[in-house]
Amino acid sequence: MARKAKTLGVNLPVPQSRDDAAETLRAIGETNRAIARIEADMNDAIGRLKDEAEKLASPLKDQVVARTEGLKVWAEANRDTLTNGGRTKTADLGTGKISWRLRPASVRITGVDRVIEAIKKLGFAAFLRVKEEPNKEAMLADPDKARLISGISIGSEGEDFIAEPFEADLAPATPIRAA
Image (tube, rainbow, N blue to C red):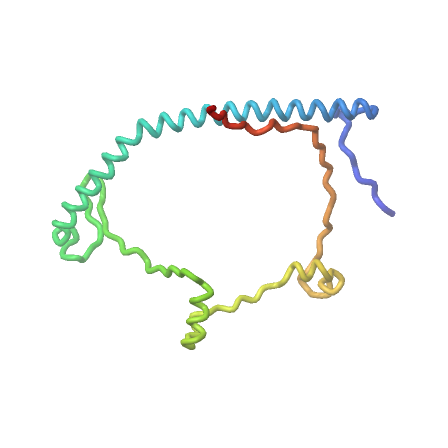
């Protein structure tokens, strides 16, 4: 026996006619625009605060960079003493620590197709990787066959209810041209 889908609505303002539904949709649009105005005001305020903070912090950041570079010059000159002849990579100065760390090696590739071609030409197969993975698009194209595979399930596409209040956009600003 098929079950009926439960519908919420007991304490909701449910329109009773087409005119009520149109009015509800208009009100949703009006409320969405009010929310957008609030968000825009918030973002304007955040932008102003961020600009103020950046202006205040900029000279302080410059001081940190200059002091760090100066400290690095001193530390490099005294590295042997600070690292106990290279036995440690960290030195505790009481107010903080300084240390030296090697960055891991990295590979940058420019022109991937050319690089792959060169690898093949040189016979360096260990530098190529072949990736196998299930093809979900093919499975969606043939769901009956895909369902025969253990571990594969094809979900329902589902259905969404969408309420789109009418909203018109303003024409873009046109620059004023001097005559």
